Image (tube, rainbow, N blue to C red):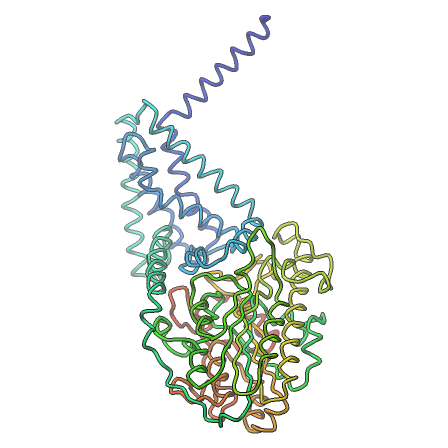
Length: 581
């Protein structure tokens, strides 16, 4: 090797020695870990809508704690593993900031981890690739450096540790003082809600409590009964269908004045009543759908753990029952309530990530097959769609590809046009499926009704906030406004003219879907139970407008104007002549 080559080798080896010296220096590792731990707090200083004092506390208090904690052992890598929970929460929080733009990790987000099926999770993570790669790279590097720290013969010097304690203890003390000031000067401030990572840890505890309570649901609801009975003669043939959509926002329905004809099939139906001012009470599926199916939206949320769903009430009243879902089982209340039916089908039981997707069109086949077996009597069918759940372009077959281009490269503001096209195509498919179900029911020529609403809506980069998807800790107008439709057969209208007239009369009244669907379905079918409240039934003369509520992440029923709505949302309510709050 010539002298030039030897020189390059020497320089390379010297460079490697310097890198090794840096990366095995426990003092450098200490600062790396402190910086990694406090990173999301610094990001949230700019993203959160809390007061300046609260955001300062959220940096100063954790910074003092982390800086002091990493001096506890001579090798900071050991403390890294003792604090690994906080590192996990940090990584989770950074991804959620990328997704929602603000707010700490919510209880519902932890529950979504265990109730979201692998296919949905894969689709979502694929479109959050930049954020996921960032946190995996950053905290993966942290794990690697913790191993280096533990394996290295070097240690942090006592002088270095003493020096860091000299500033970290006063910073921690200042954080505590500011925290106390915050508690006494801001009534809305709560440590468990407003200081990260305390809020994330607190919410994880609540999520575990709820998961445990939900796992005991079969036992806690075992003896529940609606004591339901039918007020109508057994000889009267009746068919009622409840269709629950997924992620369908009213603003993209042609029926609601959208500038695209996304709902030609339902628009062509006779005897269809459209409720123009309908909101959901929750922007999460695992809350919204159980409340639609049980009526707990008009009571304390925790009663959900002790009661059964509307299907049980119909069975007690002598109805044949069927439940068809295009969602995947996820050990939720939806599974439990659906399984109360005498016939149960989860279409995604036969579908995996590898075998591909199936469309809501298959739900029409399920309904038609059940109706083909119908020979009179009383029948309830509950249908749960996959609807417009992201990734939108996977929710409809090629023949429903009306609006193009719909091929989305990634979930970014720049691709909003493609996202909207794909979303509108999914609405068009929902419209086709719903109309097909109604036409199949109508063909039986008996007293019948079909009720439809969606669990929640969706954000699709609609304004300067850049919000996308749903289930965010703080809801938006687009996540809350949903379609609510009631179709009545001509036979039903002739048999029950008063109830039919009230269904139409009440269409102009602002309603919350989760509070009215359960009671309306029971009332429209003539089922008597003490759990049916006429004040919440759209076909009852006792129906009255009710205060609009939202179920918070901590399962509190909050007034609509106390759940984090911004001026952007209020403007949309006013623009569409909807009642707020």
